[in-house]
Structures are given as C-alpha cells and as structure tokens.
Length: 301
Image (cartoon, rainbow, N blue to C red):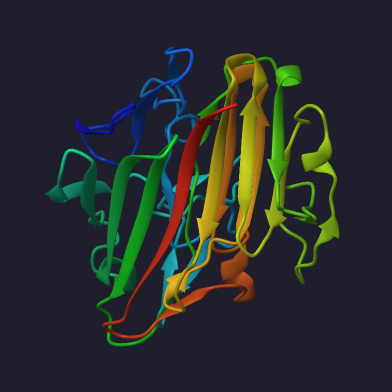
C-alpha cells in the first residue's frame, strides 16, 4: 500500500497502485474526518469505486478493434465490456504501478503494461502518474499529473481521462453542483456521444439539487464544484493546461448514483468513442512526451 499525507488529509492507494483506497480529510472548522473519495472496494467490480485511469480511450468504444499506430488490435479478449458489449474505459486501468520516486507528500508511479499488450504499440508508451497532496492557504489540494512518452518509431494517437467517485455525506437534496460548464454534449440511448460533436446550453448547474445524470459536458478549463451543505464543505475538480505541450482535459462526464451515496466526476481529454472519429485525440511524435493535469481542492463552506 502507498500512502501520502499533508497537514490535514491522508491518501492511500492499493498495493498495485491502480486504485485509491481512501482519501480522508479533517474539516478545518468541525474537525470531523470526512471520506472524500469513495474508496476502492475489492469485493465489487473494479469500476464501481475508487478512481482509475482510462487510456488509450475513454468511456465507450463501439468497435471490437482499435488501431494503434499502424497496428490493428482485437479487443475481443482484452479489457472489459459494458452492458451493450462495448469495450469500456481503455486498457490501462488495472495495470500495475511501480514506484519510481516518493516523498511524504507525493508519489511518482510508472505503469507496467500487461503482457497481453506489451509487444504492441501501446506497450511502447511510457506512462507515469504523479500524485501530490498539499495544504495551500485554506484549501486541501490533490494534484494528479499524467505523463505520456512515445517510444514507438511512428506517431501514436490516444485520449485519456480519470474516473474518480466522490462520497456525498448527504441526501441528494442537500448537495449541489456548480460549474463554469455551460455546454452539454448530447448522448444517444446507449450513452455514445452524437457525432459530429455539438453542444447545447444546459441549466444543470443552476439547479437547487443534483439531478440524475450520466451526462457529458464541455468547457475550455472545466471547474466543477460539489457542495455538501449539511457537512459544510465543497470539492472542486479543476482541469487546466498551462502550456501548449500540455493535454487539456476539456470534457467532463458526470454520473450520479445516490443509491451508493456517490458521484463520479470524470475529467477527460476527449469524449467517448473519439477514437473511431479521430476527434480531439492527442498525437505523440516518436520520443515526444506530453502531460495532462487536474486538481481536486477541498474547502469549508
């Protein structure tokens, strides 16, 4: 198990490093210990809790094959499928992580590709994850930066994202979502985005309580606030790209599951099924490295 801490919170990851077991924050006013991430439960399906990486595609992919560089790979026996039979959440979610650097406040992992893809172009993408945890002013800030380096001899195209579940210490009527996201991307009944991609105005973030959602949104620098009034705190999920070499995480999938007292707020670099349409993909030239970043900030209300 890997653990990092700051003055007011502690983050634990499982032994493989591919799931968050817990993130506990001590509220600065009430001094109550709050579980922020709905920690990974190994007795459930891998995708039902915690937080995991989606790569080289996000959410759903409607083909049984995927082209990586110039190689077409069958997904028949790889990864996982959703209820419609679509390959889901990429292939790297459960790869084991190796610790390559660590301090009390941060840890840097390198992903170890599964043997099933180690000889494919995907196995030649070096992926690293850096978690850092700090108390900044009156906020608790978890930063997750992901690095991708192409060790293939030809360009590689991909998208990525994360799927964290946040615990809501409240009934849905006592929690609210606020955001700078003003565009919602229509989804079909099978939750595949409508292509060509377009956005419509949304009032989801102006409502007094969180509606039932499995919905996709877009914004240049998304910032989503989950406000839990009866526990007097808020969680902000913020994505940004400071430099041209950084990968913007401009898409956010939000899934509410109040039966599990949790909500998924997923920062992504592209919408679902983007691979088949060549839409919003990141291109890595040989030996090139790019990274993307998002932060989760906690503060009292």
